[in-house]
Length: 417
Image 1 (tube, rainbow, N blue to C red):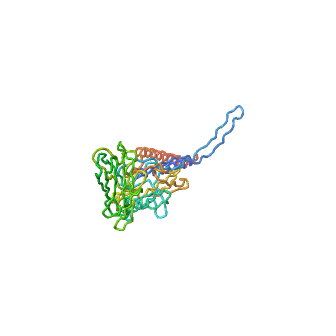
Image 2: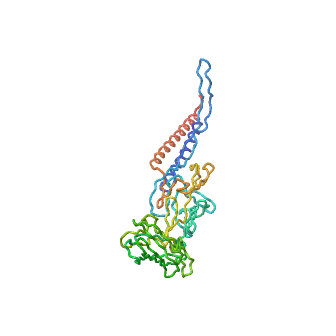
Image 3: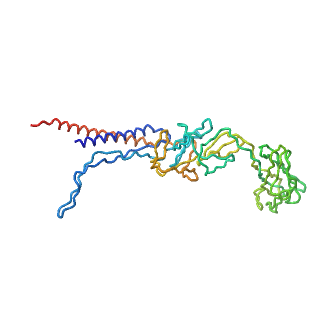
């Protein structure tokens, strides 16, 4: 009877633990990226009353006689199944699709989270909104280059940071130069280019017909000194470009601004030799233009966006966009072995394995969805069913205790005859 009493007590205690876990799951049904837990039971110590014996000749053997003494908690497992994604429209809200974790830090301490409700603080750091931990990744250099070999650091995105001016080093031409033009006819085109200080300069190109299918060209600028000389361009009988030569046989033009900015070279892309994908010489009015130039002024950061690889790109006031940072992801051999640290964060444990730090699109197969959050993976129907089962188990074990108590009471009240 005492054995039954203690077995019932173990059932009560451990069913209460299961109910505690279920209650925690239900309480966190709307917690961002919460991962539900489940309880499994195992049989406790088993007492051997009689050992097994081998069959003695013409008789059968005897099985072991054992009796259990209750049950214990076998495990409380974290279930890292994918939660549904919910669109929020906030560009710093991030959700992971896959089994990776965001890396966040408080000082030198790194922890891991699936909750991507991030925001920018007063210093421009990307932080977790609920605890202030700083999101980790790599920051790009001033030219927008990301180096995956860089060590992890706080991601900093200060609104108002500048991007340097870029001098024009290439212009692209397209269109026709009239194959029926008379010798001496001209065609002008112009474009605004930029020096290393971001100052704008007008670049004027004049084509002068010298023969059927042949033109000379020259460049001028009102506030820059341009390399002297005249270049030439020729077309074959089908209008295809056959040659485009620079003044003096060079490969680019050199412009020296009058404002003291450094001289800068400009390459002219007139198209592919033997093709019509740039300048062409067909028999109708000249319409060639400069379609592109790649320089720009300096600009201030106005907004950010995040792609599926966790690359944070900045849009600047000069119309330029380039990468600012990339968010790191961590993976574990056994994520169920992580330690819950509260605030929706996890820490490495002896059985989780070490974090493998990577980046989406390269060393991690997980992807990031911006403007969305991962919902809790708690299944309410399953939790309510488990709660009923836990309640019935608790009641049944309580009945064992009351029955054992009743039998003990009968034993105590036995009187000798």
